[in-house]
Structure formats: C-alpha cells, structure tokens
Image (tube, rainbow, N blue to C red):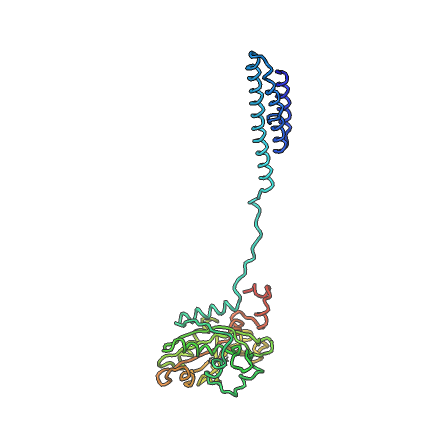
Length: 342
Ligand code: PHE
C-alpha cells in the first residue's frame, strides 16, 4: 500500500506540472482527490490493514493528500498569474504615442464682424434684441408706414409664407423697431437687432436671397440727426480704423424722415473706382434716418415729445469691407480654404 501511495504522489505531482489550463487542473483534482479518485480508493481499502499498520499508512496517505492539495493550489496561482500577464499584454496602451490632432475651427468672419459691431454698440449703451425671421406683413411693412402698393411688397420681391400675404420672411430687420417700441414702451430706447433677412434677389458678387442686417433704434427726448451721424462715425472708425472715410447721401425710406444712405470708401481702390465697388469708389453700407412721426404714433409714442433715429446695416457688406472680401458668395460657400484665413 505504501508503494501504491507513493506512486499516486509521483503521478499526481508530475501530471500537475504539465497542466496548461484551469479545466485540466480541475480534472486532475477529481482524478486524484475526488470521491471516486485514486487516493480515496486507497483510503477505503485501509480497513483491511492491521491495527499497527493503519496509523502508519494513514499518516502517509495524509502526507500525500497534503502534497497534492498544495501542488494544486500553487498550480492554480501560477495559472491565474499567467492569464493576468497575457491579458495585460493584450490590453496594453502606450500612453507615450502622440494622439490624433484635433482640428479646431474658429468663428466665421460674419460672426467676428457682428461681435465687433455688438461690442461697439454695447459700449454706447445699446441693448441687443432678437426677433422672428418669419414675420407679420403688418410689422414688416404696414406699421413701418410702407404703403399697400409699395413695390417692395410685390411677390416678385418678397417671400410670402401665407397666400393672403399676411405672413412673410422678413425683408429687413426694421420690423424690430416696432417690436422694440412695443416691448419697451417708454423711451429712452436704445436697441440693436441683428438677424437674417430674405429677398428675391439673384445671387451675384454683392447679392444673396438671404443676408444679414443689424437694425439700430434710438428714441429719446431731443434726439437729432447729429446723434445719428456721431453714432455711425463712432462705429465706422472703431471698426475700420480712424482714417476710414464715410459719406451721407440723401435717400428715401417710408419709415424715416429725413432719410439717408451711408457709404464707405472702397477698400480696394480707395475711391478711384474698381470692379468691387462697380466703378463707384464707394460701397453702400447702410440706410438710416430720423424715425418717421407716423411710425412713432403707430407704436404709441408721442412724436411731439420724443424723436429718434434708426439705421439698418448690411452685415455682409460690413464684413466684406472689414476683412477685404471682394465676393459675397465666398461668405456662404463654407470653403474651409477661404474661411481659415480669418
Ligand atoms: N430697412 C432698410 C433697408 O433694408 C434700412 C433702414 C433701416 C433704413 C432703418 C432706415 C432706417 O434697406
């Protein structure tokens, strides 16, 4: 029996040395130590031994069991250590490899020009308002003193949203004058309202069916054309430099009286005349004037007490002049090669 036990010990330890995975290990444990295992079989036959032999063999059998158990444990530990090592190798991340560079965008030149203009007006005490692009004809035309038969109301000029022509895509930001007066009610009013406007224009170097305007409105006691001129001079010089040249030309708008247009000297030719300014030497930048008394009355403000000025700046033209862009189409085409220059 002693020989039998030693053979089991030898075989078990050898087999365990060659184990490759947990399943094999478990099979060996069952084979040697299980209920029907080899060692158990030997122990069961101990009853046949004499009383003197029994404790001696029992001692040896216990030693064999302990040796096999110990070997199983150490093999198990070695297996799991090896498995961990394999996993760590497979999942290794080299934190020293340089990452993929992230391409950072930047603000569109139109937003840059708008932010600059906003800053300048905010420093003069203006409040920024926003309003709907889908507008009532009543706000876009009627309450701005634009007659029922005015050509700008024509379907060939204006995108109407409803067949009865009561709702439209605003053709100008001037309806924000009405909304500002409705909202603030009692002057002083000093607001800036930038946003998109829509007209049925063909696309060319200076036209687009969608473009942006910045509306300005100031109403208080004793406001005159001099305040308008000073405000716009401040804007132009802050934006384009102290030596920029602007001119005021008489004009007509139904909602201002008197009205004017303001041009800035062409940045390309400095007033000589070139394709960018269509040979004029000047680029039209905005329309403006003193708010018409009828418009004030339409909004419940007494024109005998208050007066005001309003202006509407073409933001594309301002950005074009600011960044020396000669074709408006570039602004909307989103060509990265163009946009990344600003
Ligand atoms: N709304 C006018 C336009 O689109 C510009 C303007 C605004 C004129 C305010 C006078 C006062 O041409």
